[in-house]
Length: 236
Image (cartoon, rainbow, N blue to C red; front, side, top):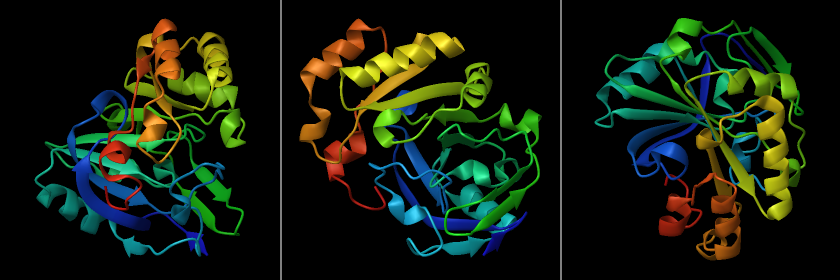
């Protein structure tokens, strides 16, 4: 399968609240893109990874713009999967606020040609930088607990973006040490770092010793509100 410019493969579209990060609680329209170049072991949206991992539909640029324009939600959240596999800059609609949830492993202002593990080929041109500056970027680099490797050059790029916030998911104090390493190596502003707890149950989000350590290190705590309210339910 080959995904080319102008094609947008979407896993699901739904209305909910933003559950994590600096905009937690915000009434939003979610557009979840299909396909991801990473394979994080604790990922709770594995149905978005490949061609056969879940159901998805093909949309055009104009179809998505119409959905965005007609949504009563002012905040539009591109999530995935990995949204930066697609030309997000072409989906901008006036009077809407756009958020992109990305793993930070792709630089959007560079052209892309990538082959996923299932053989899916994705190609797109570089996104326009002036449009991207109008988006909020929620960058979630995957720590070693996800069995992934962070690319310093790419994290350096995001650390320099004024509209970028960072969301790290942890399981232990060791993960906080890794966050400190990347914060110092890439000069990330600690006031832009949000730390969440891995898990898909209410109990997983209520670990006071870890939260106290997050506070002590000067980071923001980011509980997964949607998990606390609905559990791991699709479309929430």
